Length: 281
Image 1: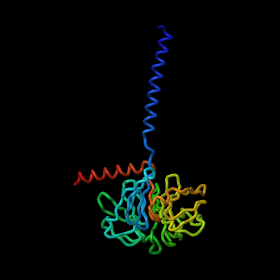
Image 2: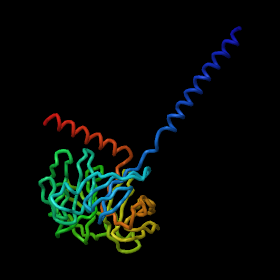
Image 3: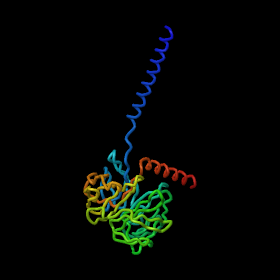
Image 4: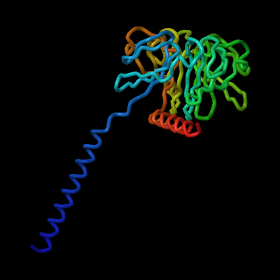
């Protein structure tokens, strides 16, 4: 056959292997489902979303790709019926909760301006943010935690925190170590006076928020059951979640949006904590 023929056979064999590998890779890629965007939310009243009916004290996890919802946190964890009006999550799986009125969870009594850190595995709650930090008896209606440990919040009425006076449509960044507060988002960015009642800040600095009534932000008009993603650097906004996903008009009053992959890590962390608790017991 000669050297040239042998080289041709080697080349053909190698080409066949490469084509087969490429086909397998393409098939694997095609079989990989698109990464779902998980949104955790609560509403001012009971609602139905993705086939799930829930209460104002429940928190649901909504899959924007599948269009399905599941119960993530039950209002039954409270000692009575409550309305969760601010919510966030920590990397260890603990939930940060504030309610519209006085409530009790995990053995802890909290006021509308407090934020409780609730461990869903042990069922115990501790105080994460104290209402006494405000000048008056404030009601927190939007709350999230930044990667640096600072908190971003808004209140139902105008308030003062660490010497900073702000309005119900402002977002305030508070440093729990230094005790300093600064304006994170200015209500003047809306076309009119508004009340922010749900917020989650993404790693790129964009802000996912909702308002108590319909509003205009960054040129985008939206409703109280919508979530918008606002980009501060360009002063633009896009619709992130549409109120039309609900079975009726609803008001989102608490939201948390994990970064891609975070939801899986949180679930793994909760499962690990649960197994560890079972071993200890």
